Length: 124
Image (cartoon, rainbow, N blue to C red; front, side, top):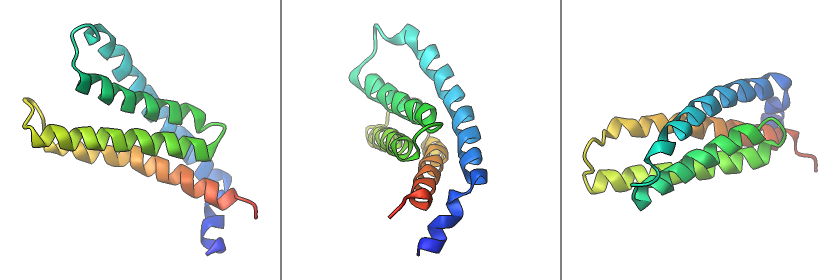
């Protein structure tokens, strides 16, 4: 099993994760900045979703230095976004599209890639 995780220790996987993390981080930064004007009249669900965005963004930034911390932040933020998306689907929120759940695959894959890199470089 050690040989499987050792494949992810190469610099190629690390740079793939960093590039995709940077692109995802830039998209999330645009979303966070765009939502600043709606902070005054927002409900609790809005704030919880923004916390998920901020956690994923922080994980993308931390991914340049610490892979394990980045994977925890990204997967935690993705879990928050997933729970809030399913909650929105259950109350039939106006304007909700279930296809948006598929967009959560991208940060989840990035989080798992950072976790695989960490497991590949972990010393016993």
